[in-house]
Amino acid sequence: MKAPAHNLDRRVLGLWWAASAALVAVIAIGCGVAWFLDLLPPPFAVLIVLVAAALGGLVPPVRYRLWAYEIRAHDLYTSRGGLFVTRTLIPFDRIQFVETRQGPLDRAFSLHQLVVYTAAGQAGRIPGLGDEEAGSLREELSRVAGTVSV
Amino acid sequence: MRAPSASEGARLHPAAIAVWFIEEGRRLGLGLIPLLAIGGRVRLLLLAGLVVAALAPVVRWLRFRYHTAPGTLVVEGGVVNRWRRTIPAARVQSIDIVQKLRHRAFGVVELRIEVAGGSGTEASLVALTPQEAERVRRSLSQEGVAADPEKVAAPVLVRMTPRDLVLAGLTGGRVAVIAVLLGYLQQLAPDDFISSGAERLVDMGVGGVWLVISSIAGFIVVALAISLGATVVTLWDFTVERSGDRLLITRGLLDRRRSQVALNRLQAVTLQENVLRRALGLASVTVVVAGRAGPKEEQHETSLLLPTGTRSTAVELIAAVLGTDASRLTEDLVMAPRAALWRRLAYAGLVATAAGVAGVAGLDARGAAALIVGAPAASVAWAAWRALGHRVDRPHLVVRRGVLVRQTSFVALPNVQDLRLTIAPLQRAGDLATLVLGIPKQRLKAVDLERTRAEASFEQVADRLFTAPA
Image (cartoon, rainbow over all chains, first blue to last red; front, side):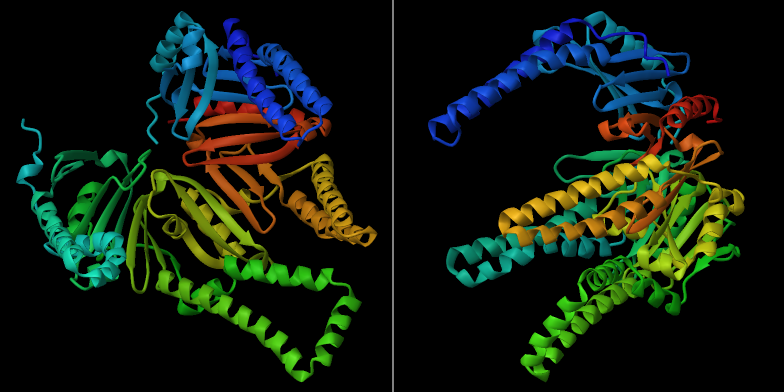
Protein backbone atom coordinates (compact mmCIF):
# COMPACT_ATOMS: atom_id res chain seq x y z
CA MET A 1 0.00 0.00 0.00
CA LYS A 2 1.33 3.39 -1.06
CA ALA A 3 2.59 5.69 1.67
CA PRO A 4 0.65 8.96 2.15
CA ALA A 5 1.93 11.88 0.10
CA HIS A 6 2.63 14.66 2.61
CA ASN A 7 5.29 14.98 5.25
CA LEU A 8 4.94 17.03 8.39
CA ASP A 9 6.33 20.51 8.72
CA ARG A 10 10.12 20.29 9.17
CA ARG A 11 9.93 22.38 12.33
CA VAL A 12 8.40 19.39 14.10
CA LEU A 13 11.94 17.96 14.15
CA GLY A 14 12.99 20.82 16.41
CA LEU A 15 9.97 20.17 18.60
CA TRP A 16 10.76 16.48 18.94
CA TRP A 17 14.42 17.19 19.64
CA ALA A 18 13.42 19.65 22.31
CA ALA A 19 11.17 17.01 23.86
CA SER A 20 13.99 14.42 23.65
CA ALA A 21 16.43 16.87 25.24
CA ALA A 22 14.04 17.38 28.14
CA LEU A 23 13.71 13.63 28.58
CA VAL A 24 17.49 13.10 28.39
CA ALA A 25 17.94 15.86 30.97
CA VAL A 26 15.56 14.06 33.33
CA ILE A 27 17.42 10.77 32.79
CA ALA A 28 20.76 12.52 33.36
CA ILE A 29 19.53 14.00 36.62
CA GLY A 30 18.23 10.59 37.68
CA CYS A 31 21.56 8.95 36.87
CA GLY A 32 23.43 11.74 38.65
CA VAL A 33 21.39 11.18 41.79
CA ALA A 34 21.92 7.40 41.55
CA TRP A 35 25.65 7.95 41.16
CA PHE A 36 25.67 10.34 44.11
CA LEU A 37 23.86 7.74 46.25
CA ASP A 38 26.26 5.01 45.11
CA LEU A 39 23.45 3.07 43.49
CA LEU A 40 25.06 3.12 40.06
CA PRO A 41 28.76 2.82 39.11
CA PRO A 42 29.92 5.96 37.24
CA PRO A 43 30.66 4.21 33.91
CA PHE A 44 27.12 2.82 33.79
CA ALA A 45 25.59 6.19 34.57
CA VAL A 46 27.58 7.83 31.78
CA LEU A 47 26.70 5.01 29.39
CA ILE A 48 22.98 5.29 30.10
CA VAL A 49 23.00 9.03 29.53
CA LEU A 50 25.02 8.65 26.32
CA VAL A 51 22.67 5.99 24.93
CA ALA A 52 19.63 8.10 25.86
CA ALA A 53 21.19 11.13 24.19
CA ALA A 54 22.05 9.15 21.05
CA LEU A 55 18.51 7.75 20.81
CA GLY A 56 17.04 11.18 21.54
CA GLY A 57 19.07 12.59 18.68
CA LEU A 58 18.49 9.81 16.15
CA VAL A 59 14.83 8.91 16.70
CA PRO A 60 13.22 12.23 15.65
CA PRO A 61 14.64 12.22 12.07
CA VAL A 62 13.55 8.60 11.58
CA ARG A 63 10.15 9.37 13.03
CA TYR A 64 9.88 12.40 10.77
CA ARG A 65 10.69 10.36 7.68
CA LEU A 66 8.05 7.75 8.60
CA TRP A 67 5.26 10.18 9.46
CA ALA A 68 3.02 10.98 6.49
CA TYR A 69 -0.55 12.04 5.82
CA GLU A 70 -2.73 12.57 2.80
CA ILE A 71 -6.23 13.76 2.05
CA ARG A 72 -7.49 11.29 -0.52
CA ALA A 73 -10.70 11.23 -2.51
CA HIS A 74 -12.89 9.93 0.30
CA ASP A 75 -10.77 9.73 3.40
CA LEU A 76 -7.90 11.01 5.51
CA TYR A 77 -4.96 8.62 5.44
CA THR A 78 -2.08 8.75 7.89
CA SER A 79 0.86 6.47 8.46
CA ARG A 80 3.46 6.57 11.20
CA GLY A 81 6.03 4.54 13.05
CA GLY A 82 8.83 2.17 12.12
CA LEU A 83 8.98 -0.32 14.94
CA PHE A 84 5.27 -0.11 15.64
CA VAL A 85 3.56 0.87 12.40
CA THR A 86 0.10 2.42 12.56
CA ARG A 87 -1.93 3.40 9.54
CA THR A 88 -5.25 5.14 9.91
CA LEU A 89 -8.08 5.68 7.46
CA ILE A 90 -10.90 8.01 8.37
CA PRO A 91 -13.69 8.26 5.78
CA PHE A 92 -14.91 11.85 5.44
CA ASP A 93 -18.53 10.95 6.05
CA ARG A 94 -17.67 9.46 9.44
CA ILE A 95 -15.93 12.58 10.76
CA GLN A 96 -17.86 14.17 13.61
CA PHE A 97 -15.61 17.15 14.17
CA VAL A 98 -12.08 18.38 13.72
CA GLU A 99 -9.96 20.53 16.01
CA THR A 100 -6.51 22.04 16.01
CA ARG A 101 -4.57 22.11 19.26
CA GLN A 102 -1.47 23.91 20.46
CA GLY A 103 0.45 22.90 23.54
CA PRO A 104 3.24 25.06 25.03
CA LEU A 105 5.90 23.26 22.99
CA ASP A 106 3.81 23.54 19.81
CA ARG A 107 3.50 27.26 20.43
CA ALA A 108 7.25 27.64 20.89
CA PHE A 109 7.72 26.19 17.40
CA SER A 110 4.54 27.79 15.94
CA LEU A 111 3.09 24.40 15.14
CA HIS A 112 -0.37 22.89 15.53
CA GLN A 113 -1.78 19.44 16.05
CA LEU A 114 -4.85 18.40 14.12
CA VAL A 115 -7.22 16.00 15.86
CA VAL A 116 -10.05 14.22 14.08
CA TYR A 117 -13.00 12.69 15.93
CA THR A 118 -15.45 10.10 14.71
CA ALA A 119 -18.33 8.62 16.67
CA ALA A 120 -15.79 6.04 17.87
CA GLY A 121 -13.82 8.79 19.62
CA GLN A 122 -10.48 10.32 18.72
CA ALA A 123 -9.69 8.62 15.44
CA GLY A 124 -6.57 10.40 14.26
CA ARG A 125 -4.01 13.02 15.21
CA ILE A 126 -1.47 14.76 13.03
CA PRO A 127 1.29 16.59 14.93
CA GLY A 128 3.58 19.23 13.55
CA LEU A 129 1.50 21.26 11.12
CA GLY A 130 2.28 24.87 10.23
CA ASP A 131 -0.23 27.66 10.82
CA GLU A 132 -1.68 27.73 7.34
CA GLU A 133 -1.60 24.00 6.72
CA ALA A 134 -3.37 23.24 10.03
CA GLY A 135 -6.00 25.90 9.38
CA SER A 136 -6.74 24.81 5.85
CA LEU A 137 -6.83 21.13 6.79
CA ARG A 138 -9.25 21.86 9.59
CA GLU A 139 -11.47 23.90 7.31
CA GLU A 140 -11.40 21.35 4.53
CA LEU A 141 -12.06 18.36 6.76
CA SER A 142 -14.87 20.16 8.55
CA ARG A 143 -16.39 21.00 5.17
CA VAL A 144 -16.40 17.40 4.00
CA ALA A 145 -17.22 15.98 7.45
CA GLY A 146 -20.17 13.68 7.32
CA THR A 147 -23.72 14.13 8.39
CA VAL A 148 -24.15 10.41 9.04
CA SER A 149 -26.06 10.06 12.28
CA VAL A 150 -24.93 7.40 14.69
CA MET B 1 -44.71 29.37 16.37
CA ARG B 2 -43.48 29.37 19.92
CA ALA B 3 -40.73 27.03 21.01
CA PRO B 4 -42.06 24.43 23.41
CA SER B 5 -41.47 25.72 26.89
CA ALA B 6 -40.73 23.39 29.73
CA SER B 7 -42.02 25.85 32.28
CA GLU B 8 -45.52 24.83 31.41
CA GLY B 9 -44.46 21.21 31.65
CA ALA B 10 -45.26 18.65 34.27
CA ARG B 11 -43.57 17.94 37.58
CA LEU B 12 -42.31 14.53 38.48
CA HIS B 13 -44.33 12.32 40.80
CA PRO B 14 -43.77 13.63 44.37
CA ALA B 15 -42.10 10.31 45.15
CA ALA B 16 -39.09 11.84 43.38
CA ILE B 17 -38.39 13.72 46.61
CA ALA B 18 -38.08 10.48 48.51
CA VAL B 19 -36.05 8.81 45.76
CA TRP B 20 -33.57 11.70 45.61
CA PHE B 21 -33.41 11.81 49.40
CA ILE B 22 -32.55 8.12 49.50
CA GLU B 23 -29.98 8.40 46.70
CA GLU B 24 -28.24 11.47 48.12
CA GLY B 25 -28.55 10.11 51.64
CA ARG B 26 -26.78 6.96 50.64
CA ARG B 27 -23.95 9.00 49.25
CA LEU B 28 -23.59 11.48 52.12
CA GLY B 29 -25.56 10.39 55.12
CA LEU B 30 -24.31 6.95 55.97
CA GLY B 31 -20.77 8.13 56.58
CA LEU B 32 -21.94 10.88 58.90
CA ILE B 33 -24.22 8.87 61.17
CA PRO B 34 -21.40 7.66 63.47
CA LEU B 35 -20.48 11.30 64.03
CA LEU B 36 -23.84 11.82 65.73
CA ALA B 37 -22.39 9.99 68.68
CA ILE B 38 -19.90 12.81 69.27
CA GLY B 39 -22.57 15.10 70.63
CA GLY B 40 -22.34 18.77 71.48
CA ARG B 41 -22.09 21.31 68.71
CA VAL B 42 -21.05 18.74 66.15
CA ARG B 43 -24.38 17.00 66.58
CA LEU B 44 -26.18 20.33 66.15
CA LEU B 45 -24.28 21.01 62.94
CA LEU B 46 -25.05 17.54 61.68
CA LEU B 47 -28.72 17.92 62.42
CA ALA B 48 -28.72 21.19 60.50
CA GLY B 49 -27.03 19.36 57.65
CA LEU B 50 -29.67 16.67 57.74
CA VAL B 51 -32.44 19.27 57.54
CA VAL B 52 -30.79 20.82 54.50
CA ALA B 53 -30.35 17.37 52.98
CA ALA B 54 -34.04 16.72 53.53
CA LEU B 55 -35.10 20.05 52.07
CA ALA B 56 -32.84 20.01 49.03
CA PRO B 57 -34.81 17.28 47.19
CA VAL B 58 -38.04 19.23 47.82
CA VAL B 59 -36.62 22.35 46.16
CA ARG B 60 -35.17 20.23 43.40
CA TRP B 61 -38.58 18.67 42.80
CA LEU B 62 -40.26 22.07 42.75
CA ARG B 63 -37.81 23.28 40.10
CA PHE B 64 -37.77 20.15 37.96
CA ARG B 65 -40.16 20.13 35.01
CA TYR B 66 -40.39 18.18 31.79
CA HIS B 67 -42.46 18.56 28.71
CA THR B 68 -42.95 16.39 25.68
CA ALA B 69 -43.57 17.80 22.24
CA PRO B 70 -43.74 15.77 19.04
CA GLY B 71 -40.17 14.64 18.45
CA THR B 72 -38.57 16.22 21.52
CA LEU B 73 -38.33 16.07 25.26
CA VAL B 74 -37.54 19.25 27.16
CA VAL B 75 -36.25 18.94 30.70
CA GLU B 76 -35.63 21.88 32.99
CA GLY B 77 -34.31 22.14 36.50
CA GLY B 78 -31.51 23.27 38.74
CA VAL B 79 -31.59 24.94 42.12
CA VAL B 80 -28.69 27.39 41.93
CA ASN B 81 -27.73 27.10 38.29
CA ARG B 82 -30.85 26.72 36.20
CA TRP B 83 -30.49 24.42 33.24
CA ARG B 84 -32.69 23.38 30.40
CA ARG B 85 -32.08 20.55 27.99
CA THR B 86 -33.82 19.71 24.75
CA ILE B 87 -33.48 16.13 23.60
CA PRO B 88 -34.45 15.41 19.99
CA ALA B 89 -36.10 12.01 19.65
CA ALA B 90 -33.98 11.33 16.57
CA ARG B 91 -30.82 11.38 18.70
CA VAL B 92 -32.07 8.99 21.38
CA GLN B 93 -30.04 5.79 21.55
CA SER B 94 -31.95 3.94 24.19
CA ILE B 95 -34.71 4.43 26.74
CA ASP B 96 -34.73 2.50 30.01
CA ILE B 97 -37.56 2.19 32.43
CA VAL B 98 -36.07 1.23 35.78
CA GLN B 99 -37.90 0.26 38.91
CA LYS B 100 -35.59 -0.15 41.85
CA LEU B 101 -36.84 -1.04 45.32
CA ARG B 102 -37.06 2.62 46.26
CA HIS B 103 -39.31 3.22 43.27
CA ARG B 104 -41.35 0.17 43.97
CA ALA B 105 -42.14 1.38 47.47
CA PHE B 106 -44.03 4.30 45.90
CA GLY B 107 -45.33 2.49 42.85
CA VAL B 108 -43.35 4.69 40.48
CA VAL B 109 -40.69 4.06 37.82
CA GLU B 110 -37.62 5.93 36.58
CA LEU B 111 -37.21 6.77 32.91
CA ARG B 112 -33.64 7.10 31.61
CA ILE B 113 -32.79 8.45 28.20
CA GLU B 114 -29.39 7.98 26.60
CA VAL B 115 -28.06 10.00 23.69
CA ALA B 116 -24.97 9.15 21.61
CA GLY B 117 -21.69 10.58 22.76
CA GLY B 118 -22.87 11.56 26.21
CA SER B 119 -20.80 10.74 29.24
CA GLY B 120 -23.78 10.06 31.43
CA THR B 121 -27.51 9.63 31.30
CA GLU B 122 -28.78 12.63 29.37
CA ALA B 123 -32.12 12.80 31.07
CA SER B 124 -33.38 10.93 34.04
CA LEU B 125 -36.98 11.33 35.12
CA VAL B 126 -36.59 9.70 38.50
CA ALA B 127 -40.22 9.19 39.45
CA LEU B 128 -43.16 8.83 37.11
CA THR B 129 -46.27 6.76 37.31
CA PRO B 130 -45.89 3.72 35.04
CA GLN B 131 -48.59 5.08 32.72
CA GLU B 132 -46.83 8.44 32.39
CA ALA B 133 -43.46 6.76 31.77
CA GLU B 134 -45.06 4.72 29.04
CA ARG B 135 -46.56 7.87 27.54
CA VAL B 136 -43.19 9.68 27.52
CA ARG B 137 -41.48 6.62 26.08
CA ARG B 138 -44.05 6.38 23.30
CA SER B 139 -43.81 10.07 22.58
CA LEU B 140 -40.00 9.79 22.21
CA SER B 141 -40.32 6.64 20.15
CA GLN B 142 -42.73 8.48 17.88
CA GLU B 143 -45.16 5.64 18.14
CA GLY B 144 -48.82 6.29 17.64
CA VAL B 145 -50.91 6.29 20.78
CA ALA B 146 -52.81 3.31 19.47
CA ALA B 147 -49.70 1.20 19.26
CA ASP B 148 -49.71 0.30 22.91
CA PRO B 149 -46.98 -2.34 23.23
CA GLU B 150 -48.86 -3.89 26.14
CA LYS B 151 -51.69 -4.73 23.81
CA VAL B 152 -49.95 -5.32 20.51
CA ALA B 153 -48.55 -8.83 20.50
CA ALA B 154 -44.82 -8.34 20.01
CA PRO B 155 -42.85 -11.35 18.81
CA VAL B 156 -40.85 -12.67 21.74
CA LEU B 157 -37.25 -13.33 20.75
CA VAL B 158 -35.98 -14.50 24.12
CA ARG B 159 -37.69 -15.58 27.31
CA MET B 160 -35.61 -17.03 30.11
CA THR B 161 -37.27 -19.51 32.43
CA PRO B 162 -35.96 -19.80 36.01
CA ARG B 163 -34.28 -23.01 34.88
CA ASP B 164 -32.43 -21.16 32.11
CA LEU B 165 -31.31 -18.56 34.63
CA VAL B 166 -29.95 -21.20 36.96
CA LEU B 167 -27.99 -22.59 34.04
CA ALA B 168 -26.76 -19.09 33.18
CA GLY B 169 -25.68 -18.52 36.77
CA LEU B 170 -23.91 -21.86 37.02
CA THR B 171 -21.96 -21.24 33.84
CA GLY B 172 -21.37 -17.51 34.39
CA GLY B 173 -18.02 -15.74 34.26
CA ARG B 174 -17.08 -16.24 37.89
CA VAL B 175 -17.76 -19.95 37.80
CA ALA B 176 -15.91 -20.40 34.53
CA VAL B 177 -12.75 -18.87 35.95
CA ILE B 178 -12.84 -21.18 38.94
CA ALA B 179 -13.44 -24.21 36.75
CA VAL B 180 -10.49 -23.34 34.54
CA LEU B 181 -8.17 -22.80 37.49
CA LEU B 182 -9.15 -26.10 39.05
CA GLY B 183 -8.68 -27.86 35.75
CA TYR B 184 -5.22 -26.40 35.36
CA LEU B 185 -4.17 -27.22 38.90
CA GLN B 186 -5.24 -30.79 38.33
CA GLN B 187 -3.25 -31.06 35.11
CA LEU B 188 -0.24 -29.16 36.38
CA ALA B 189 0.43 -30.89 39.63
CA PRO B 190 2.62 -33.96 39.13
CA ASP B 191 1.10 -37.13 40.53
CA ASP B 192 3.62 -37.40 43.33
CA PHE B 193 2.90 -33.83 44.39
CA ILE B 194 -0.68 -34.74 45.05
CA SER B 195 0.17 -38.07 46.67
CA SER B 196 2.92 -36.65 48.88
CA GLY B 197 0.64 -33.81 49.88
CA ALA B 198 -2.03 -36.35 50.59
CA GLU B 199 0.41 -38.37 52.70
CA ARG B 200 1.21 -35.34 54.76
CA LEU B 201 -2.47 -34.75 55.24
CA VAL B 202 -2.98 -38.36 56.22
CA ASP B 203 -0.34 -37.79 58.88
CA MET B 204 -2.55 -35.02 60.13
CA GLY B 205 -5.26 -37.60 60.39
CA VAL B 206 -8.68 -37.81 58.89
CA GLY B 207 -9.38 -34.32 60.18
CA GLY B 208 -6.75 -32.83 57.86
CA VAL B 209 -8.21 -34.41 54.76
CA TRP B 210 -11.68 -33.27 55.63
CA LEU B 211 -10.37 -29.78 56.30
CA VAL B 212 -8.91 -29.50 52.80
CA ILE B 213 -11.82 -31.11 51.01
CA SER B 214 -14.43 -29.12 52.86
CA SER B 215 -12.60 -25.82 52.42
CA ILE B 216 -12.29 -26.34 48.67
CA ALA B 217 -15.88 -27.51 48.44
CA GLY B 218 -16.99 -24.59 50.57
CA PHE B 219 -15.15 -22.16 48.32
CA ILE B 220 -16.78 -23.59 45.22
CA VAL B 221 -20.24 -23.65 46.77
CA VAL B 222 -19.96 -20.04 47.88
CA ALA B 223 -18.77 -18.94 44.43
CA LEU B 224 -21.59 -20.85 42.77
CA ALA B 225 -24.16 -19.47 45.18
CA ILE B 226 -23.02 -15.89 44.61
CA SER B 227 -23.01 -16.27 40.85
CA LEU B 228 -26.34 -18.03 40.88
CA GLY B 229 -28.04 -15.63 43.25
CA ALA B 230 -26.81 -12.53 41.43
CA THR B 231 -27.84 -13.92 38.06
CA VAL B 232 -31.31 -15.02 39.08
CA VAL B 233 -32.11 -11.79 40.91
CA THR B 234 -30.87 -9.36 38.26
CA LEU B 235 -32.12 -11.33 35.26
CA TRP B 236 -35.41 -12.64 36.65
CA ASP B 237 -38.01 -13.04 33.91
CA PHE B 238 -35.55 -11.85 31.25
CA THR B 239 -37.49 -11.21 28.07
CA VAL B 240 -36.57 -9.72 24.71
CA GLU B 241 -39.44 -8.65 22.49
CA ARG B 242 -39.31 -7.15 19.09
CA SER B 243 -41.69 -4.29 18.55
CA GLY B 244 -41.43 -2.90 15.05
CA ASP B 245 -37.87 -1.68 14.57
CA ARG B 246 -36.95 -1.78 18.25
CA LEU B 247 -36.11 -4.25 20.94
CA LEU B 248 -37.72 -4.23 24.37
CA ILE B 249 -35.68 -5.95 27.06
CA THR B 250 -37.33 -6.63 30.42
CA ARG B 251 -35.65 -8.12 33.47
CA GLY B 252 -35.11 -8.07 37.22
CA LEU B 253 -36.70 -9.38 40.38
CA LEU B 254 -36.04 -6.63 42.92
CA ASP B 255 -35.05 -3.88 40.51
CA ARG B 256 -37.30 -4.13 37.49
CA ARG B 257 -35.89 -2.73 34.30
CA ARG B 258 -37.28 -2.30 30.84
CA SER B 259 -34.89 -1.13 28.13
CA GLN B 260 -35.74 -0.08 24.66
CA VAL B 261 -33.19 0.08 21.87
CA ALA B 262 -33.88 0.80 18.23
CA LEU B 263 -32.41 -1.92 16.04
CA ASN B 264 -30.54 0.58 13.91
CA ARG B 265 -28.85 1.88 17.08
CA LEU B 266 -27.09 -1.41 17.72
CA GLN B 267 -23.44 -0.73 16.95
CA ALA B 268 -22.28 -4.31 17.29
CA VAL B 269 -23.55 -7.66 18.49
CA THR B 270 -21.19 -10.09 20.22
CA LEU B 271 -21.43 -13.83 20.72
CA GLN B 272 -19.74 -14.60 24.05
CA GLU B 273 -18.57 -18.10 24.86
CA ASN B 274 -16.62 -18.62 28.04
CA VAL B 275 -14.68 -21.85 28.43
CA LEU B 276 -17.35 -23.57 30.47
CA ARG B 277 -20.20 -22.60 28.18
CA ARG B 278 -18.23 -23.53 25.10
CA ALA B 279 -17.66 -27.00 26.50
CA LEU B 280 -21.41 -27.30 27.05
CA GLY B 281 -22.34 -25.86 23.65
CA LEU B 282 -23.77 -22.71 25.24
CA ALA B 283 -23.25 -19.04 24.54
CA SER B 284 -24.50 -15.62 25.55
CA VAL B 285 -25.10 -12.54 23.42
CA THR B 286 -24.34 -8.90 24.20
CA VAL B 287 -24.83 -5.72 22.20
CA VAL B 288 -22.94 -2.45 21.98
CA VAL B 289 -25.15 0.62 22.11
CA ALA B 290 -23.61 4.08 21.74
CA GLY B 291 -24.07 6.47 24.61
CA ARG B 292 -25.12 3.86 27.10
CA ALA B 293 -23.75 5.09 30.37
CA GLY B 294 -24.23 4.24 33.99
CA PRO B 295 -22.35 2.34 36.64
CA LYS B 296 -19.79 -0.12 35.36
CA GLU B 297 -21.48 -3.14 36.90
CA GLU B 298 -24.77 -2.19 35.28
CA GLN B 299 -23.23 -1.79 31.84
CA HIS B 300 -22.60 -5.45 31.37
CA GLU B 301 -26.15 -6.31 32.29
CA THR B 302 -27.77 -3.61 30.22
CA SER B 303 -25.95 -4.84 27.16
CA LEU B 304 -27.12 -8.40 27.61
CA LEU B 305 -29.38 -9.77 24.91
CA LEU B 306 -29.25 -13.45 25.80
CA PRO B 307 -27.98 -14.55 29.24
CA THR B 308 -27.42 -18.07 28.01
CA GLY B 309 -28.72 -20.43 25.39
CA THR B 310 -27.51 -23.05 22.99
CA ARG B 311 -25.01 -21.76 20.51
CA SER B 312 -27.41 -22.16 17.61
CA THR B 313 -30.14 -20.22 19.46
CA ALA B 314 -27.61 -17.48 20.08
CA VAL B 315 -26.57 -17.33 16.42
CA GLU B 316 -30.22 -17.34 15.30
CA LEU B 317 -30.91 -14.44 17.66
CA ILE B 318 -27.96 -12.48 16.31
CA ALA B 319 -29.12 -13.11 12.77
CA ALA B 320 -32.65 -11.98 13.64
CA VAL B 321 -31.37 -8.80 15.25
CA LEU B 322 -29.00 -7.99 12.40
CA GLY B 323 -31.62 -8.89 9.82
CA THR B 324 -29.45 -11.36 8.01
CA ASP B 325 -29.09 -15.05 7.31
CA ALA B 326 -27.80 -17.02 10.28
CA SER B 327 -25.95 -19.61 8.23
CA ARG B 328 -23.77 -16.95 6.62
CA LEU B 329 -22.74 -15.25 9.84
CA THR B 330 -20.28 -17.57 11.50
CA GLU B 331 -19.31 -19.80 8.59
CA ASP B 332 -16.04 -19.59 6.70
CA LEU B 333 -14.15 -17.32 9.01
CA VAL B 334 -10.61 -16.72 7.83
CA MET B 335 -8.30 -18.39 10.32
CA ALA B 336 -5.07 -16.78 11.47
CA PRO B 337 -1.94 -18.00 9.68
CA ARG B 338 0.57 -20.30 11.36
CA ALA B 339 2.90 -17.36 11.97
CA ALA B 340 0.33 -16.08 14.45
CA LEU B 341 0.77 -19.28 16.43
CA TRP B 342 4.55 -18.85 16.42
CA ARG B 343 4.14 -15.29 17.67
CA ARG B 344 2.04 -16.52 20.59
CA LEU B 345 4.41 -19.40 21.31
CA ALA B 346 7.28 -16.91 21.36
CA TYR B 347 5.49 -14.95 24.09
CA ALA B 348 4.77 -18.20 25.97
CA GLY B 349 8.46 -19.08 25.72
CA LEU B 350 9.34 -15.65 27.06
CA VAL B 351 7.02 -16.15 30.02
CA ALA B 352 8.46 -19.60 30.74
CA THR B 353 12.05 -18.31 30.49
CA ALA B 354 11.30 -15.41 32.79
CA ALA B 355 9.71 -17.80 35.29
CA GLY B 356 12.71 -20.16 35.06
CA VAL B 357 15.23 -17.37 35.55
CA ALA B 358 13.26 -15.99 38.45
CA GLY B 359 13.04 -19.49 39.92
CA VAL B 360 16.79 -20.10 39.68
CA ALA B 361 17.59 -16.67 41.04
CA GLY B 362 15.12 -16.98 43.89
CA LEU B 363 15.85 -20.59 44.87
CA ASP B 364 18.67 -22.59 43.33
CA ALA B 365 18.97 -24.89 40.31
CA ARG B 366 15.75 -26.60 41.38
CA GLY B 367 13.99 -23.30 40.74
CA ALA B 368 14.31 -24.10 37.04
CA ALA B 369 11.27 -26.28 37.61
CA ALA B 370 9.36 -23.02 37.24
CA LEU B 371 9.93 -23.53 33.52
CA ILE B 372 6.90 -25.77 33.77
CA VAL B 373 4.65 -22.71 33.43
CA GLY B 374 5.71 -22.95 29.79
CA ALA B 375 3.24 -25.82 29.40
CA PRO B 376 0.06 -23.95 30.30
CA ALA B 377 1.42 -20.83 28.61
CA ALA B 378 1.91 -22.78 25.38
CA SER B 379 -1.55 -24.30 25.57
CA VAL B 380 -3.05 -20.86 26.13
CA ALA B 381 -1.04 -19.62 23.14
CA TRP B 382 -2.43 -22.43 21.02
CA ALA B 383 -6.00 -21.78 22.20
CA ALA B 384 -5.59 -18.06 21.55
CA TRP B 385 -4.39 -18.77 18.03
CA ARG B 386 -7.26 -21.16 17.34
CA ALA B 387 -9.75 -18.54 18.52
CA LEU B 388 -8.60 -15.97 15.96
CA GLY B 389 -10.79 -15.51 12.93
CA HIS B 390 -12.27 -12.74 10.83
CA ARG B 391 -14.32 -11.97 7.76
CA VAL B 392 -14.49 -8.41 6.44
CA ASP B 393 -15.74 -8.84 2.88
CA ARG B 394 -19.43 -9.26 3.73
CA PRO B 395 -22.13 -6.75 4.68
CA HIS B 396 -21.49 -7.67 8.31
CA LEU B 397 -17.90 -7.70 9.44
CA VAL B 398 -17.00 -10.52 11.82
CA VAL B 399 -14.09 -10.59 14.25
CA ARG B 400 -13.35 -13.44 16.62
CA ARG B 401 -10.80 -13.78 19.43
CA GLY B 402 -10.37 -14.68 23.08
CA VAL B 403 -9.21 -17.62 25.18
CA LEU B 404 -11.16 -17.57 28.44
CA VAL B 405 -14.07 -15.85 26.77
CA ARG B 406 -14.26 -16.36 23.04
CA GLN B 407 -15.89 -13.27 21.58
CA THR B 408 -17.27 -13.18 18.08
CA SER B 409 -18.35 -9.65 17.19
CA PHE B 410 -20.60 -8.72 14.29
CA VAL B 411 -20.71 -5.18 12.95
CA ALA B 412 -22.75 -3.77 10.13
CA LEU B 413 -20.52 -1.87 7.74
CA PRO B 414 -22.22 1.54 8.24
CA ASN B 415 -21.39 1.37 11.95
CA VAL B 416 -17.65 1.24 11.33
CA GLN B 417 -16.31 4.74 11.92
CA ASP B 418 -12.63 4.47 11.21
CA LEU B 419 -9.95 1.93 10.37
CA ARG B 420 -6.48 1.23 11.62
CA LEU B 421 -3.77 -1.13 10.55
CA THR B 422 -1.03 -1.80 13.08
CA ILE B 423 2.17 -3.80 12.81
CA ALA B 424 4.16 -4.61 15.96
CA PRO B 425 7.80 -5.78 15.79
CA LEU B 426 7.05 -9.49 16.24
CA GLN B 427 4.23 -9.20 13.72
CA ARG B 428 6.61 -7.82 11.13
CA ALA B 429 8.81 -10.87 11.57
CA GLY B 430 5.88 -13.15 10.77
CA ASP B 431 4.41 -10.93 8.06
CA LEU B 432 1.37 -10.24 10.18
CA ALA B 433 -0.77 -7.20 10.84
CA THR B 434 -3.78 -6.25 12.93
CA LEU B 435 -6.84 -4.56 11.50
CA VAL B 436 -8.74 -2.37 13.96
CA LEU B 437 -12.37 -1.41 13.33
CA GLY B 438 -13.45 1.68 15.24
CA ILE B 439 -17.07 1.62 16.36
CA PRO B 440 -18.65 3.80 19.05
CA LYS B 441 -17.33 2.83 22.49
CA GLN B 442 -15.16 0.00 21.24
CA ARG B 443 -12.38 -0.88 18.85
CA LEU B 444 -12.69 -4.35 17.41
CA LYS B 445 -9.40 -5.97 16.52
CA ALA B 446 -8.90 -8.54 13.82
CA VAL B 447 -5.56 -9.67 15.20
CA ASP B 448 -2.75 -11.26 13.21
CA LEU B 449 -3.95 -11.30 9.64
CA GLU B 450 -1.54 -12.14 6.88
CA ARG B 451 0.00 -8.80 6.13
CA THR B 452 -0.90 -8.66 2.46
CA ARG B 453 -4.46 -9.70 3.24
CA ALA B 454 -4.67 -7.10 6.00
CA GLU B 455 -3.43 -4.36 3.70
CA ALA B 456 -5.86 -5.34 0.97
CA SER B 457 -8.76 -5.48 3.46
CA PHE B 458 -7.74 -2.10 4.88
CA GLU B 459 -8.17 -0.52 1.44
CA GLN B 460 -11.28 -2.47 0.49
CA VAL B 461 -13.16 -1.81 3.70
CA ALA B 462 -12.24 1.86 3.45
CA ASP B 463 -13.74 2.04 -0.04
CA ARG B 464 -16.88 0.22 1.01
CA LEU B 465 -17.19 2.46 4.04
CA PHE B 466 -17.56 5.57 1.97
CA THR B 467 -20.00 4.17 -0.54
CA ALA B 468 -22.03 2.44 2.18
CA PRO B 469 -25.52 3.89 2.35
CA ALA B 470 -25.66 6.16 5.34
